Length: 545
Image 1 (cartoon, rainbow, N blue to C red):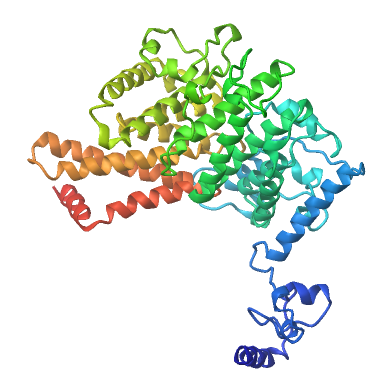
Image 2: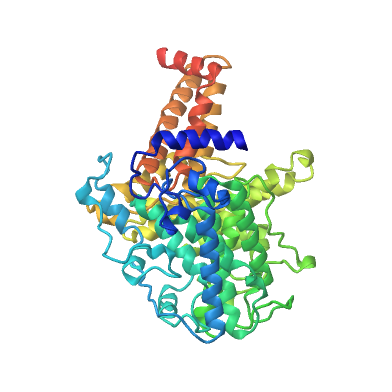
């Protein structure tokens, strides 16, 4: 330690005469108004005072341990004030276009970088707003994200005092702001994501224990927050953290009995929610449940973990919650089981756009679950055949994308993802269709006549694009192994062209949606596969011939 101190001191003496730039001093020296020499990792004044643990620097644009502890203390103090009946100042949240900041900064599709004049200006506000329990109303207008809850009701509840029992769950508010920071094009805002994330995670602790009629909406909002946090980590490629929060979302949903939103709950638990107070609340619970179901069904394969939904009546996990936008009179129970059985082949039109994605997710999750059972192929053969028939029939009934021109962009993009999920299951992957869907989505998101109307692509499209790229790579490899007939060479060249289209769209999404690194990550995975010596040689031979 003496040697280390000697080295640090000698380094400090060399720079003692120079003046540190503003903001370069460590936290302890700044707060004590002491002269700091800026030596890393520990400055000389902190070492001399035997306070090495307090020597931290904030100019690396990330939250420090001290700041994180202060965030936690601020939240606990705020909660204490609420319990003592001393609510803080009232703050408001105005839901606004969540992509406005991004759209203004990206401009047209051909722009590689936003010009300074295109970037939105942050409304004037006090310095350090991210350290408050909530951002000021001017900032909150920029930072909002659409979700499964009723937006109008959520907006109304955010205007309530902090101590009001119907005010939204703090974790949900923090998660909404977290996504707003992530989708912002302003790096000075993004640097505060860690603070919001830690606040949200801390606020979620103990959410499953909240009971009573007035706490019901808080528990549903906690489920919504867990879904959004899991998606946040998935988009960043942090699968370990994503798996934790995805499992937490499923566990909370089951504890609230969201899988049995109907007139009579046959398997109530001590933590089951009271009946919904009105149709809006019932619809909210249904939408939140299916958002959890879609997360578990589609992303479990990505997370390399088994699905958490067992849908087993003997365990009390049977899914009886109806599909979204289905009349209550048509609620028959066993929702997913009936859909994934031969009964579906005899049913009529599905009708609801919102339900299509949940059904596609059910097929996707079932297909990948069966594909993972490589040691029991004979036993699941009948299930595979049934699922193949259901998938083909479901795909046939889906509205074609070119028939949705009169629909809004939200409907068209949702249906594009639904088509892509259907085309990406583990047994019947249609790479050509996925390529067309990616291009369809890109046209809607990035090539509108008005740049401010652009949208972010759904992050699961990155996974679908990667699946298509993997299939096309295998087709190219296979076409170069067997006899070199004209038909085989032609198919190989077509696969090579489609692979180029997949990579182009993934890179396009990565360039315009740099807030979602999953697109660039998936493109890099495909390109790494193409760099294999044997495959590179085969592609070169194909191009030359």
